[in-house]
Image (cartoon, rainbow over all chains, first blue to last red; front, side):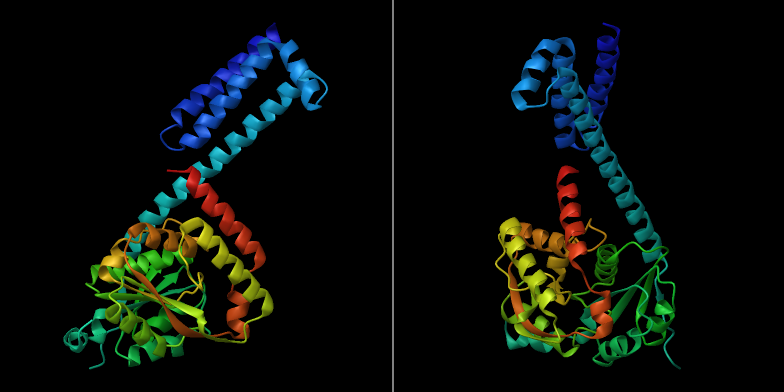
Length: 110
Length: 234
């Protein structure tokens, strides 16, 4: 029970984070929420996880939960990458404005 | 278009955008040649560590300097923005590594005017290329195929840095891909603009220098990753 509550709190954190990211990266956000929801389901119904795990050839239900967590981690990693890209775009815009304001032209020969 | 329009055309209304990163070894004759033809040239020094900016300035170009290296896509967008600010009627992008011929610029501008197009894209496969390795040819053909799938544009050469655009065409371009994926992004934006584009035969001269600076297979994977990542981001 303690593990289930702990996992659920972590998954709830993922859902809240995904929700806040929806405006910036909707695909990533929806994907995170879907995978986190699957995580909730398997954490609270481990027998279903075991059945599904056997069906897809993983073996144990707990392994399936770990795999779901791994997928969430990868999605969040991708999201972090996208966030860095957004930051880089802002830096580019800033640098461009500075560069344009300081354009240099050679003095014409007299 | 009419000969009246052509008569009015002044080379000073044509801005050539040259994105340059550490090109001090080859830049001088390239810029001089363009300036001699009365084009206005803006060299975007993309955070070079050598004398690229100083050389460009001494050969008659206007120089816009990025404080740090941002990438060719970012440099081209900076150059396009600058040319638009200066009131350019036509903007041409031109590589700094010596692959392009300045004589092709007039052919691109003629194509814009005569064929009433907003974009004239240089094609080495309609024109000619000297010294192109087989691997490069294969890579470029793969890019042509991929562009056809992604943008619906039927082009023969999708990664040619020699292109011209009208003022209206240039104002529709807003590159967010700082590095090599900008060429594909630009074609996507051309396709999305709905404005007319044409291909023009040009000549590409490969040199040992330009080949060393050119794209590799690993770059094409990075381009695919960058384009996919942008699709996930707003």
